[in-house]
Length: 362
Image 1: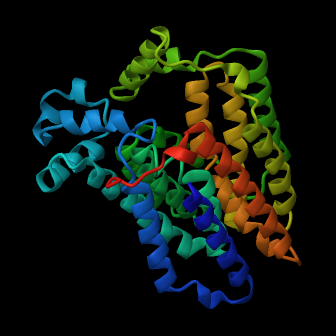
Image 2: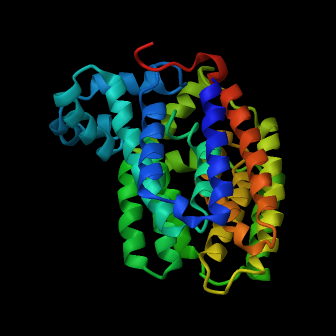
């Protein structure tokens, strides 16, 4: 759909303007863009994204808050915040499920916009990267992850400011929206200073271990019998065993992954120019772990992709944050646009949204 590329082009133009005039980051265009993305992602026709019908099934099944506590083993497959919000939405929208999507997408967009505004040196460049790389996957497909990941990303900034209690608080909120947010707690294992040779060695070692040895992460996590998480992975495994879902680990080294690998070298180079107390260093470590853990868990692509994607959210901040370290800032911005355009095309092709996108009323 042409609207995807029109939005991307508008964000690129605003990014160029922002290089010379910071006042363009104003409440009016931010509000318009926030509403546009909320409507675009939330009020699409139900069923065009691959997870939509699964969500509709959940919307129909969830009836009351009491059910979640009375029969927890059955309902723990869904995160509590999702369950409770759906119960609330049922009293307002009944079976008009497109509004359910709209509410979750709006929550995610609002949180991310506020975070971008607070921390981004170049707001529109960051927004452009977010729209192309994250928005189609999260806001248009995985609405629980979209909200959870917003809190995860915010918590990482708090950690970079040494606000560990607030980091823990927001990571716990993220976990209540999606269990995969548990991966975000890895930030507590990281120091806030520059990446050392020791850290790089660990990253390389984890990657090599994943390539050489096949680590069955799914069975290991299931055996831990963590309520909700183990249940969900058991369901995924059953679907795979039944042939309903398939993953080809030979596709681990795809175009997107190779590009992310190349970007890691670029980010390491840029980090040399960041001040020692910059958030850039902690985000670089998170990004490098996204690659090494992706390879470590590559024998089980369903888990590897989830871990790699969540930690890989740091990419957009590193990319946009690198602009300030260039004398001719239009050059990295142009590279970001080309990268965003390429990733967006791949996402739309994979999700078949090039020709199928429609609003709920169409």
